[in-house]
Length: 274
Image (cartoon, rainbow, N blue to C red):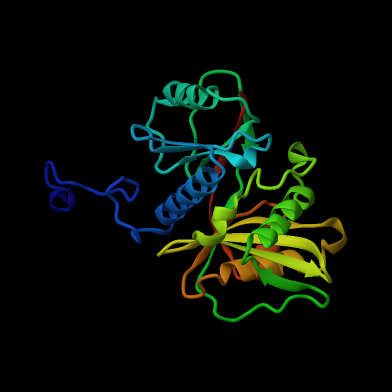
């Protein structure tokens, strides 16, 4: 069996190294896409963005009250025994500016960060759908529009804040989370309208290898009527030749399963308090 062992000193790629090439595996493509998406989103509103090369953490902070604008993302598994050091990295970065709590995302199990101030959020499923060129028609009475200008982006932003909901960002302030520069970025935003009233949202961030679906929300009067599924499908169709992925909730995973999404693994989420 000795011939199965790697040669001494052989460089073995585990699929999660900084040098791992794009397209090596779905998980690395998704976590890199998520990190890139939040870099772009937070930089557009003038927030802070930092990379901690030693841990693979990408730190983004819009300084807003909602943790959805303040997100730390692991781009590789946390090394064993580094929990306290990682906690200090997170506290040092987010403690440097006022703002609301922040979310820590990892596609891998997280160690204890060694102090109070990090609360468990859960382990939502990462779901993936292969390229799908068949359109999902919206339910009757819903019109889906891809955002093409600043006013449409503001309609998306307001609907997301009010419908998700994110009460810590109320009353709504235009441009606090989504800046106009995002219209011409790799983000794609879709709004569902009931007449002239925006009632549902979904966004996508498009890379060369995967489309990540984000910010799915529906106002109460449209829940259970197929709006969320239709908006999710529209966002995924931003690049129909690519697979799409999203981080679901256990409550919503059935909706995504009906669209052809399959669970891959469970993320680990923590809520950090400043």
